[in-house]
Image 1 (tube, rainbow, N blue to C red):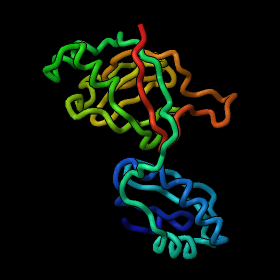
Image 2 (image 1 turned 60 degrees about the vertical axis):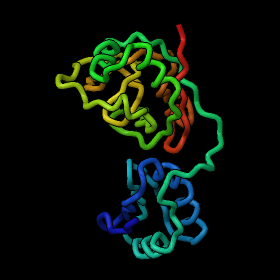
Image 3 (image 1 turned 90 degrees about the horizontal axis):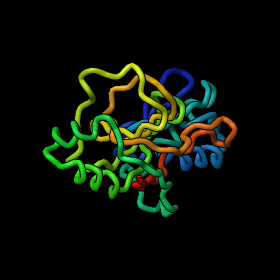
Image 4 (image 1 turned 60 degrees about the horizontal axis):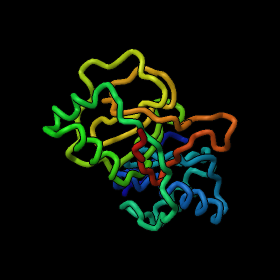
Length: 206
C-alpha cells in the first residue's frame, strides 16, 4: 500500500488488492472524522482510493493514512445479504460467449449465476458497477466492435468483470441477459442500487 499526494487537495492510496477499496471507503472516512481532519469524499477504484480533503489538511490526512491500518485484501466481514438481481438469460452474445469459452450455453449460465460477486468500484455511467467474482472460465476481452446502443438492464461481462447497464448507452461488453432491476434512480437515496463493497448475486428467471 502506498500513500501519495494527488494534487494539492487530495491523496491517493494505491497498491490495494482488487475489491478492498470499496470496503475501506467508510473506514477511511470515519478515521478522518475521528482524528478531526477534513474529509470531503473518499472515491474507490479497482485497486486504489482517493481521499478529497483540501490543501489545508493535506499533510494531516496523509500522516493519518500512512499510519492507518488499511487491509490490503478484501474483507470477509461484510456479512450483509447479497443484493439479488433477476436475470433472463436472453443476451445477444450468449451463444458467442459459449463458443469463445468452449462451453455450452447452459454451462455459461450456470457459471454466471452461481458466482458470488462484490462491487469493486463504480464508473463509466451513473449506477454502472464493476463486479468482481466472475469465474475465470468466463474471462473474455471486450468485443472487437462495440455496440452503439446497449439497452438499459443488459447484463454483461468483459475481462474479469460483470455488470448491468443502468441506461441505454454505447458499450463493448458481451451481453448475457437482461434484468428488470433499476440500477439508477434519482428519487432514491442513494440513487445507485449498487455501492462499492456490496455483495451481489444474479438469480435466473424465465
